[in-house]
Image 1 (tube, rainbow, N blue to C red):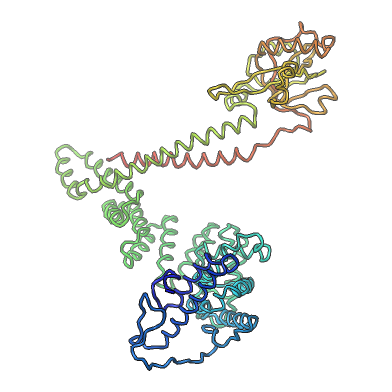
Image 2: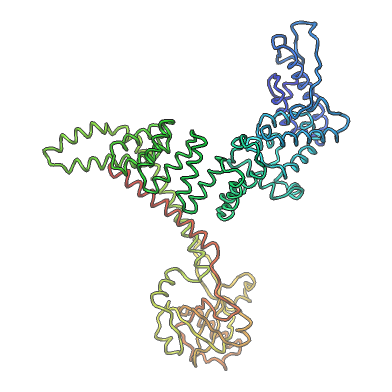
Length: 634
């Protein structure tokens, strides 16, 4: 049996590599699903670990591994195998455990975890956790679940660890996958599970900055600092302020805390406070480039361009190709009127970052402005000046090679943005029409023409189609004539009307969903037709329909025919004289004014699509502007 082939790794003496290979194979040979495969894998793992440990005790010159060997080959036959009793520590615990007592093993392991956590310098050292997790107890399939659960529970109350340690723990226990399972989330605090995922996915803060603070209650300080960090991420500025002040009261010289303080000050519009925070970081850590850059941006936005320039120049003295410092320096030089220096700076930036389109746009603009100034000179001086400027600017070939991809990129961005704008505009239009029951053009007409309050039949005759009106009808009756939407073979929708009798004969009465109901009522002493989108108990009881907005539409001929038939069928002719009916116009009711049917509030989809459209428009017009700048002097 070739143990390395079973583990699917090359022969090695690295215990960590063996354990990772074992963990990977264990997923394929679970003891409950494949007991024979698991038994073989476990025996293979034990032999590989034993060989690796024996190899550690023998001088390297005396032992070699080959792909076909399953035990170390010794160059001297009489070399004894030494057994050394190890001292119990958080790094090595296996040798002293009673292997016949799993409870004692796990308790001892957790004591080592606590000892490691309580010693802050050791706690923040990833190597110590790596050594701790090499314990056979962690890799024992029968005990690892209990170990995993107890350690995860321990971390509920002891969770101030650097990200590097969280990643080591995730690599050993795969808690991310377990957290997704409902039973695990119920068993453990949902809040802590979310906290754990954040530690894996977010940048995190440094812990080594607290090593010198020996008399500090570090866990208390870290609780406040972490609370401030989370509050800033969620833009809860009041909570961030409280946590920052509490942390500063304990220890004011932590660079990470000062960085959070600087961010907080910028959020609340206190650039001077932010400058003080970043300056304090630099006094503690003179080589903190990020703080110099933060100060440079603050100076720049405060219009202190010279100070911003000095900060950038210092950064570049340490890191000559720092892209952000080069970009900001070029902008400072432009504001100070040093176009030639800015040109050199942006060229250097493009050499290091060829796809920095902002630098490319600014550089193109600088060259164009220089040429425009020269072309304004008198003819006798222009030729010589152009030659001199061309010599200074250099050939355009190198710049053209960078401009063409930039043009293609901006065209692609504008095209995609325009396509998405059309898509979301269509979605927004459909939602708007569904909500308002009218098109945007109709609503524009409403605002232009105003809302007419109908008080008499004569006023209705003087109003043209599509006008919006308010009215109150009496003696309202349902005609059992339905408005609904159909789709033709080409997928185009259209509005049609049908009465109850016809639908009942064809059997379609239960197959359609009406979009409106045709009714008849009196406006003054004249019967008129209206279309409502719904019926209410109050209307049926009182026969009164009062609406705050309706739209005048022409009566389709079929509606007139159906109205005459349904008046006779429903025996309503004594109440409504068909000959007195307004046979030219009817009203499509939009919104009622009765309390039980309030005007519906706009759906969230309108806000969502509208917001996306604004963002897309910004991208689209931003790309067009960049194209204009790039091609202006191309």
